[in-house]
Image (cartoon, rainbow, N blue to C red; front, side, top):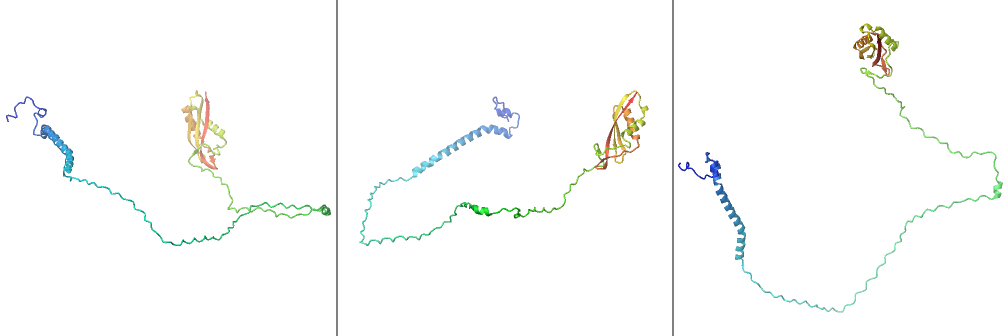
Length: 279
């Protein structure tokens, strides 16, 4: 116990780091034994390396010491003489008969199919008859008909499958769409001037103040398929004049003749400019 509380004048770095800590913990033990373990590992590795490097030389030296001594033998080469040619005497034999003459093969005549070149046939000219025979011939006064060639008849036309008729396809007309371009315009009974006069006669000028001067507006309405008027609107700068113009147009009870496309009545938007002078 006295050794643990003794003061060391030169403490190590590990003792400073682990001061007032649990030194029984593994980290302190690893730090204190790190140098000795590293030194041992270096020495062991060096010895192992030297053993691995020296072992081949030791094995080679042992093999050389255990090898048997070789004996040298001097062998003199023997000169080999070439064999002499042996001459064999043959008895006298009659000469061989001459070879038979070659047989001549029969000749085969080859006939080639030669097509002669075409030659233009000479023109045969008939000499004219003598003058004595020409004088004997008489010319006739009556003309004679020669041999007539058969008349050319054109081939009959191919049979037709049926008559081709052009059918005019008319555009489809909508009953709900409001058109602005039609084939036949909508008309008021008596003409547009009568409709203008009806509007002016039914217009209540008392609704205006009287000092507006010249007032203009554009009245638009839809002429239905039955001739009635709907969707009446007035587009002008004076709201009072616009309201009275709309009321006046709606008060006209006469029905219009509807506009038509392809002979079918359609809805048509009519545009009517209206101008009045107030003093």
